[in-house]
Image 1 (tube, rainbow over the protein chains, first blue to last red):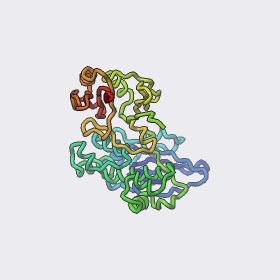
Image 2: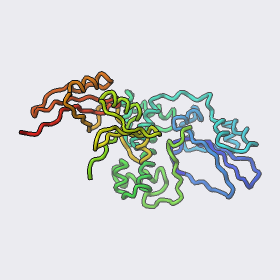
Image 3: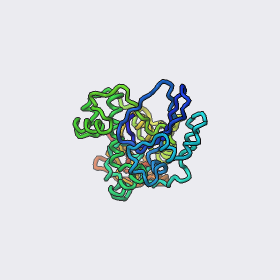
Image 4: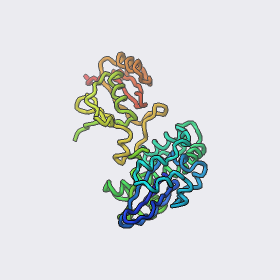
Length: 219
Length: 131
């Protein structure tokens, strides 16, 4: 699974076994991880919009980056998950566990910055975004950390990574051309970014990549 | 090959089309049911609007137009014999004035406004062939 800076609430259940479902809660992700499947596995999950990470993790959001809570730890963190043990699993049931009552009001500047980073493929500089929002880059980074768990710069780099990955896998252009259009200084810069966020180099793409579909479904 | 379309990515396709009908007197050709794309009746070269989200779906990276910032480095130009009237109408219907009509040394009347999305729109008279 490739990271996209968002938090997930996932429940894993194997239909061939009577074990209770295993809940998994992730913090904002910036590193790729491997998921091992077994025959009969069913996964139901909700991927939160990036700015809603704070609703889940509250003040622990920044420390939750790249962390995962499984099983009892997840239930202890979000007790509503325990109530799902005896019910047949569905995404609609998972929606109920999202901590909406305490959802903080998201600063409109964070949402504007996220939208503009997605539209620009992560290529707009944080300083430029901050200037448009009449605040400093430092303040915008802090707002993003409070709501997403990541700085605006890190989130921009994730968006840039995903768009360039898509250019390479779908657009049939050379690595050098993808690096240029993706906004990387050169191919070495592209390679460093792919190592950091994907754990692989662009010339040796793993075939079983799972690409998160950013902003296709809004929760 | 010929220039077939000018497509501008905007936050709200129906609102932009409505605005262009009022401000510049061009009629809509259609708006897709999804509200993500629409075209104007502008002759052989079609002026079209697509939702900003479409750019991301198509794998493009763009800098969204912003009425509060400087305009992007391109413009569209409407040509009319009545530049003054068209300019006044555009301002009256919500365009931001940039340059009132003035005559260029080559005899053309030229004016500039910015639309609801901050895009630069020129309203000018036809360029007369040299005699």
